[in-house]
Image 1: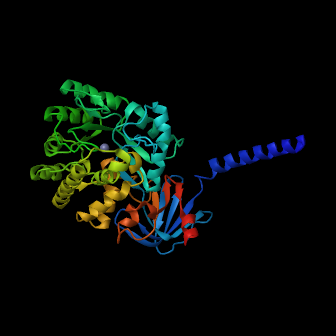
Image 2: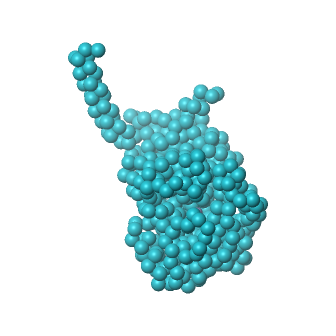
Image 3: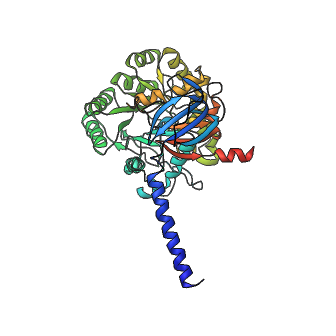
Length: 435
Ligand SMILES: [Zn+2]
């Protein structure tokens, strides 16, 4: 190759780079998109056949069924072999819990927070591939969740929209290593300071651990007192923030609900009076049933839990399911939360299978991952539905989720995902090749 050839190549490369950047910056988002679905379940209770969703920038502009005309000049995305649903919301995650596939989770080597933020992009990608376009992330060290949220909002990192709690509030207690993550506080004054500190750090929510329990530990001891929980709830609400309280057992759950927690996380053996109180107070309940099933499946190969752990987890699952069933029948507002950690990312929507098992219709189950969490997040006018004015968070799945929830819960059925008007997952070609 001569010098002149090389210079020409460089000119062409530069020109292409400029054209490419123009193309991506000016047309990728600005163009009107018309997305065709064989069927569209819009999340508000309506189902359209031969639907067209018109997307302008990051929002849905209009939705219609019956093969409506395509706006002239629109980019047509033909997904007519799939069913369209709203982007899913996973209301209990741990995106910074990254596993490299080699070390044992929770015994990983110490990593710089910036390294964790970088690595956790893999979890973010898996969430999108499972159809999750929004998460509420409940506990992360060193502000990594805040950083990821902001990078994703800036469009500099690809991942689900994030509502985050920063670092969780816990009581001091001695445990076997690894030491628990969280701001450790005891007593009402310290709780107030801790909650204010979390909110000042930029958190959207507050997360409080009202009991023991987590991973292979299924103990249910209440940690914070009612007075401490009440102080946390009041100070969070006074600053315009909501609070999620974790409780594996009935005592912590009772006091969390009585204290006015906006959402109760996990929970087995919750008593009837507390369930009635949750209905009255409209407390959201995120039972996170599937994460213990995922621990059972990975107990030996990944987590290396001690002997007996699987039996304890299975027993807890039974009681967790029973409590969720009672709560659902009583009219408590259940919400899908995977409690995704490590290699649990990508299995986020499996929780919906449990919801159908406890008696929900697939349509009711879908609501626990769309309109209900959107309302909990105060985003009911822009998330959880494919409707005019809402963010264009849309998922194409194989099959009919209203007939069989596995069309959503099995992530291999998720073929295409749009988040805020941008296509972030596209496996439609892969399907064609395999058929
Ligand atoms: Zn959790």
